[in-house]
Image (cartoon, chains in turn blue, green):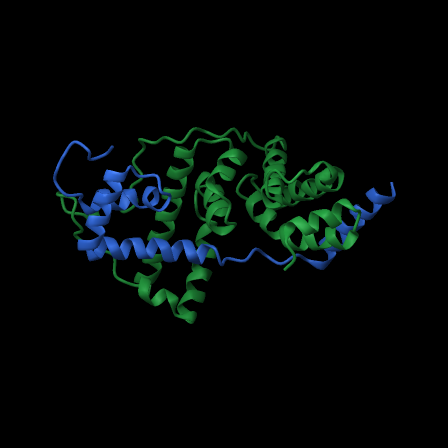
Length: 85
Length: 198
């Protein structure tokens, strides 16, 4: 993987690129462990992860636009005609 | 709210109110997703209308191998692709293209934060803050590049599983993750910029 070759610690610029793979459970165990160590000692990257999580949570609360009554009536009419047809 | 599976049973029995409920539940989400596939609202409305026609005709064949939501989204994507209004071929994601999660200027040459993110995540649980956050995300979603928007909408807004999204879009897991990563990163950056304004 990305930083398998080197022993030195993960840097922040790489850490932020691994966040999605981390949340998706797609990191190899070594990479995951290294990222977790970094997150434990780097408050900025920990905040970054928290912001991504807050972003995901907020996205999950975004409502779609409400159905207009005339559109609903039209679609139900379409259903009715099909049932009768 | 009644589970989708129960709605399907009623629908397959020819229950009109079940159809009305289904439309109530999914018309908005279908329209929102359709907008990430076709160039105009008018075409998106046609596509979604076409989806409902497909549901009316095809609900008897729905066997519940996927969730109802996934089934509906798959029909929508197929319809959108066959409109011919635009070439909808999925261009492969360029995994090597430089689209960093955070602008490189924010880091030192050694890759440490030079300008770290100003903290706000703790406050996001506050009810008023959370509401504002959702409002911003709703607006920013529309600004994402289409390929990213499709994945973020299905994963984070609609809550589909990665495998379902891959199947609907016919992309690999790795590509799906790249698009999700870029989309989420972009949303966070937009939020950061928004907060910087006040």
